Image: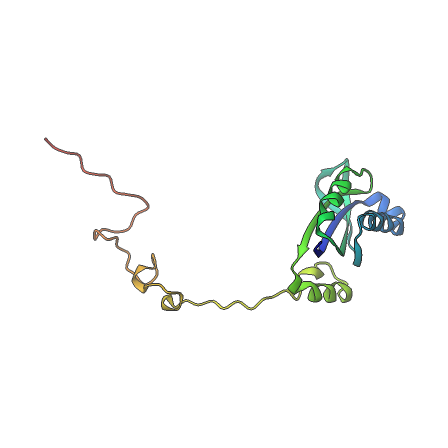
Length: 169
C-alpha cells in the first residue's frame, strides 16, 4: 500500500486544552497512532481563537497541526473515527502533502515557531509571458489583446449580440 504524508489541522475544545494541553495532545496522537500513523511533527497552531460561529456550543477553539505518514487506505477510517469522536476534537481538515514538498514543509514546521509556518518556503517559480507568439496564439485574435475596440462588423463592441432587424413585407 502507498504511504503518504498528511497534514491535519485540528480544531480542539479550548477549555479542555487550557486545562491540560499535554493530555489533549496525547489524545490527538493516540487517535492517529491507533490507525498506524507515524507522527513527524506535532505542535500547537493557535490558542483560544475566537470562532466565526459556535461549534458544539463552543465560541473559542485551539488549533493544533500534525504532520504524519500513513498508508493511504487507512486515511478514510481515521477521518471517520475523528468525526464520530465527541469531546476534544471539534473539527479537522486533512491535506495530502505532495512528495516534492515533504522535506521543505517538514523543515519549516520543525524550525519556525510563528503562526502560518506551513505556507512559508513553498514558492514555486512561475514564468509569465505576455507574448502571444510564445504561447502559440495570433496577436490579432487574442480577444482584446492587440486588437482594436471594434467587432467584426465594424461597430463598437458591446456586451451582447445585436438584435436582428425585423422583416418588412
